[in-house]
View 1 (cartoon, rainbow, N blue to C red):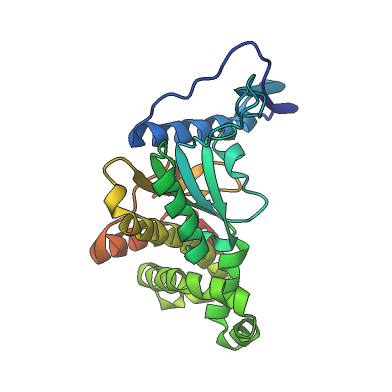
View 2 (cartoon, one colour):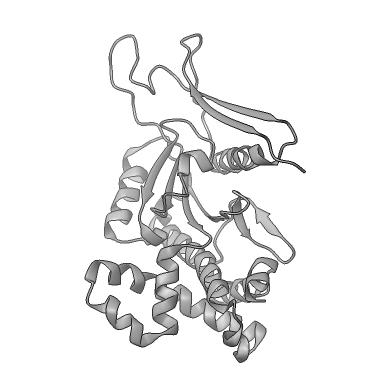
Length: 281
């Protein structure tokens, strides 16, 4: 399949019609994000020479309401994502202004400030229906944690940098869990493979996103009657949000495993996935 010569993504307000925000439940909110990402990712998969996608905006969203009133804040989902400039959250999910409450920090780690931001969204925004944790492949923050894990002496250079250390330390449990899973699945000599660092990095990205989603779920358990929690990983190569599967990149957001047994099984399957195995080999 070829790629188009022109890809145009346009956010448009033309004044001709109002854009209504439908009432969503948590399942519909998740489906809307999945559909938006599929539309975004599919822009580069077309044989057409020119591909266009238009996202309609309302006057209120742009501060152009006739009465001059500021727009109300009405997001249906909050996303905890990485600060990486290659992962623009609204674009990745194909959403409009005011659809997503976005919190971004290196490595999508759940520090106090990020947890407080999500708490604000849950407590004060009545339209909120979904909390999402999104990592991405080839994450530099996770790679830094991997390097410190594989080379403890090198970690000493990070230890004195308290802001950076706080991020690396938050990512290390996922790196450790991914390392254990890779060794169990591929043998202790897997670390000798040339691609081990890359495989460990992406495996830790996935495991960290799932672990963080579980923490978010436990943190906001009192609100789960109308707000759901999901996670996913944005694959920089395919532009799709999902998770490594046995044979291919599986599309779509998903619920986090629950409990130690489910996480151990999840980590084993992750270590044997096509994506991670290809990086290892």
